[in-house]
Image 1 (cartoon, one colour):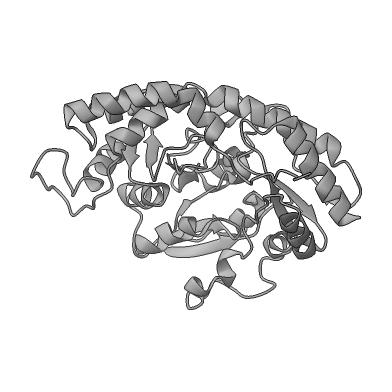
Image 2 (spheres, helix red, strand yellow; image 1 turned 135 degrees about the vertical axis):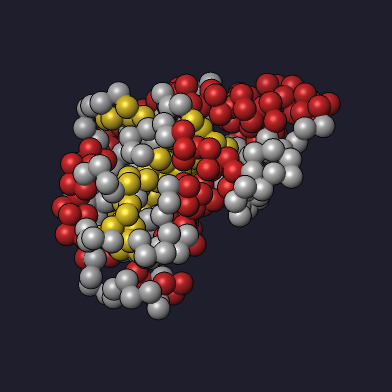
Length: 368
């Protein structure tokens, strides 16, 4: 009998739930001939702002642009230092470099999140911003970082993996001075292509992002500053509005799946993620740690189990930053150790218990 494979990600379930609403919205956009920005984008920006409890959401082309535009709009640039964790997707570091600022890396906690104690050691007179990354769907300790840095250092959240996550009732993306998020298709709130947003309560930052995303102006042929072209298109806004109405339910489903993984993988040799009760972790990824990760990864792939590694190389060891003087092997030991042990398991709305049980059984068999 042919054994069905379990993909790392399957978006078909989500699409089926919103297909009719998306089709109606697409037809409306096609009839309007308004494909970039426009009414649908404004509607989604309002809806997502209400969801986060924020005054301003500015839709942009993708999550990387959102980070760069958030930094630029907040005035971060040459001569400034920006503190980021060593274990993050490359876009976090790219955005800092692209605005001309200097990267300062810090190590992470055992929970994979930026370590406030390490942030304190990295601060200098040139520190302009800290970027806490809400990695894998869990919120970094923004409150502790704020206490350390005070009011004069910006907190720019990287909320690309945390749509819907909350801590003590407050939403990821609404905890710092400004935040950037990605709506890449695989995110908890995903578009049907690239999309992103900057979120903030600061009207000045929001206004500058609106200009920067649209060639430096907010009206046709108005160019107040040198900007770029990073606008959310209307079709993606239709998808995002439709999916936003399901986001809390989908995140609740992820938490149920995460609880089943924790129960099924409660074995020596496997470290599973947890979160305190006051925190609504949204499990963008379910990341375990284990010895002999590469062998286990290969065996699971051979068995038809979709797994991933997020991320295999810390920022300071990436070739792109070899000349940046960020450090070498051994300088960020927790991030480096985790990079050699982490394994991401399938977790998404629509993953069946039968499929999840196969993932659990295959992993337990692989680790012996």
